[in-house]
Image 1: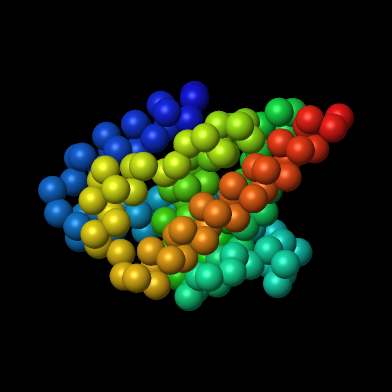
Image 2: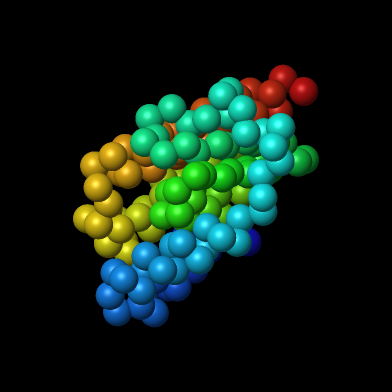
Length: 142
């Protein structure tokens, strides 16, 4: 599934909920579906800087696409990172660099995040794009 389709699917899923209580429940439920992060990946070097909660993020290259894995010690933050992981996993570095997570604004999430959560989410996206730049360079030089 291409990155635009993933983003559109996320938007449509959130349209099913009438209020933010239900949306937050869905975000938390989505986070609980994340594959557990191995203990060896829960290290300082994998912590996303700028997040109030602890968020660990790893990336690996699988052919010409990137696989992201993440976890957090906070339920809503874990749900937020799971949505961004869903958007960017199995996508090419070029697509990750090209596409911003517009679903955040389109579903109204931006208005419902505290400033610290919004900064943390921006830090997660920034880190994913840094990984994409690094893997793009690696693919170019192979």
